[in-house]
Image 1 (cartoon, helix red, strand yellow):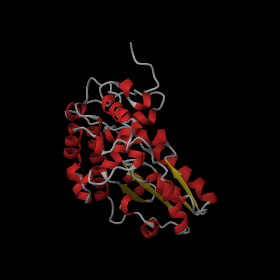
Image 2: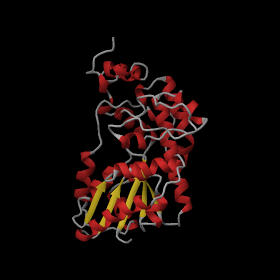
Image 3: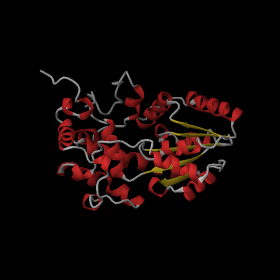
Length: 305
């Protein structure tokens, strides 16, 4: 198909930002994670090596794109859920793909706030795909990747920082491995930190997308920071164990992207105001790994008897 493009990534890495910038162009139908269940199920099958037929996944995407192109010149979707689907997006849908990346400490801190890996999984045999454990939000369960096989035991002993650092490295490594198997020019790796207006126009050119978004509109979206949040636990308040695990998990992949990974370097930057919670909130976050009821997002719940 022509006139279609995608952006993928680990999540918390600028995909939503890119979707909101493209949405400023009236000739572009721009979406963020529009098929959450279908896409995370495809990702789940890919991750666990389940040989599922992909015709339904492709048909869902193709139908949505065709509907977009009835009223717009271009169809764009940004979704972390599609991070293991690059070959389908390119080969079956004819799309180029932008792989968004962001420095690991920022992604880990953001996912900590969102509650990723806050609950221990129920799993007797890590060699087998786990069954559904979050029936209220199934795409959360399907999209929150865990290690397979023998690596699961090591991962399960990590702190949440360590688990998320593993996730950042694993997903970004998978993105690079998929890109290497596709034709040259099918995938563009783009750092969020380097995505200014001039670079955005290069991204649009790579996707063969319209370029009607003005610099003023781009700056307005960037200033809004759609996924910004308060009470972020940055490396400045991580424990020594969390810091060691983070460095060990991200080092190799961070260096391949040219990102700093040593805590000593990362903490030279002053923490952002939104990432400087009260001492009470900091303590709750640290205790949250041991006492779930102490987590800030559950502070309103009654302490167990």
